[in-house]
Image 1 (cartoon, rainbow, N blue to C red):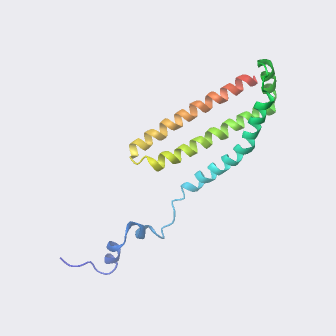
Image 2 (tube, rainbow, N blue to C red):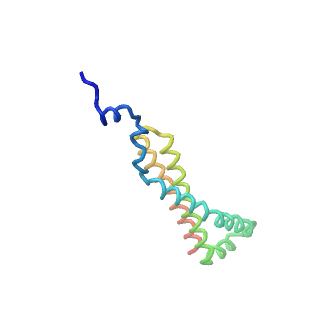
Image 3 (cartoon, helix red, strand yellow):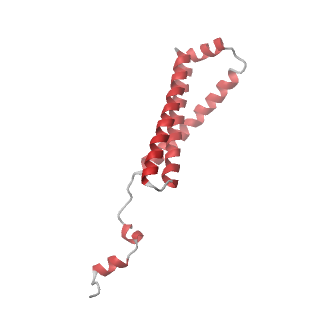
Length: 134
């Protein structure tokens, strides 16, 4: 048996990391990272608005709540809060699942179940706001 020669010997001795270096990133995580940061920044003022709304409506009856939610500005801000919150939740849970579930089939099943649950709860939240608004 002869020993590998030249370039072939270098390839065999390199580790996986050494072979991958210089090939560039997959660039699949950058959009996810930016979406997570943007939703976090959007949630700051929206969460503050939500807390202020809770304090304003403290002790209010159902009629006062309906009047408050009938104003378009309030409905739009609550819908924006729900969309940003549930999208941010989905992004964060996706990272946790991808990092800690190593079996491909379990990871896929977990991601699908998580997205279905987050989507269902987000839809319920949107429907409740729309019901109060109209």
